[in-house]
Amino acid sequence: MNSANVHDQLVNLPVSISVFSERSSASNDDLPKAFKGGPADCQTSILSIIEAQIIPRLLKAERAIGTKLTWVPASRAMPSKEEIHSFVNLCVSPDPHAAQIFVNRLLKEGLNTEHIFLELITPAARELGTQWDLDRMDFVDVTHGLVRLHAIAHEIGFAYRDGPVVEGDVKRVMIASAPGSKHMLGPTIVADFFRKEGWQVVIEISSSKKELVQAVENEWFDTVGLSVSIALQLADLGDLVDQIKRFSRNPRLVVLLGGPIFTVQNFQASDFGASVICIDAKEAVSLALALQPTD
Image 1: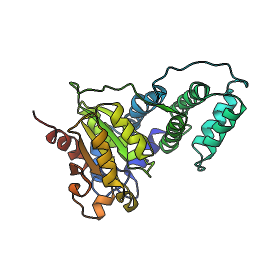
Image 2: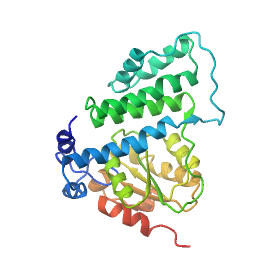
Image 3: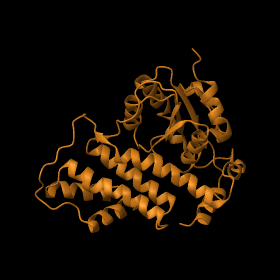
């Protein structure tokens, strides 16, 4: 995908982009202003998030139970370059189960979970980054593949556990889609607003409530932003917010809600136990700062 195509994806979406969301009517006019400098800057901004946030967090995942990786000889050869390439293609395919079936077959043939993580998932993540860098995959394909890799890593018992566990001098924000969404374009763009204001940003590509709760339980965050795309996600949103706040290392966590559903239906943040609903990307950072505890 060349830089002109990236720019077209950003500014010519059929519906506008809003805070924490892929599509909304709030702030599409602001998008070109946010990415001053032309199409190349749009690509650089997105690529910087992928390279600096998403892929490294996946590659730094550890055993969720806290044990060190151990290398045990396998009864079959490690995945070849061809198998890794095939696995990557399955991760970006429309079939939601194909990549996991591939992994299950390798486990049945004699690899263990450490082999899968180190010799399949890790090089697959690197290949996704390379395919983006070589313009052979677009943003949607890369993020779709990373979501799959993340889900498989969790399925076989790995999670990211390397973040700070107490408050620091730099504010930290986690931006994620509510379970049921895998659209990362909007959250990635909003993440760039925070990053440019000096925040340490984490884009959580988890696809389940359990993984989102685990993220705030493992690391300190000052703010969490959740994108809600469709009405079906509202049913469990209050419970999701409650779980995130209950298990957060930060007892005064600020939870921001955004997304296209809030531009077509009127809700109060208190309906879901959140701090505020924000539908303007430009206001997200200032709201997050204003809501931070002062004592």
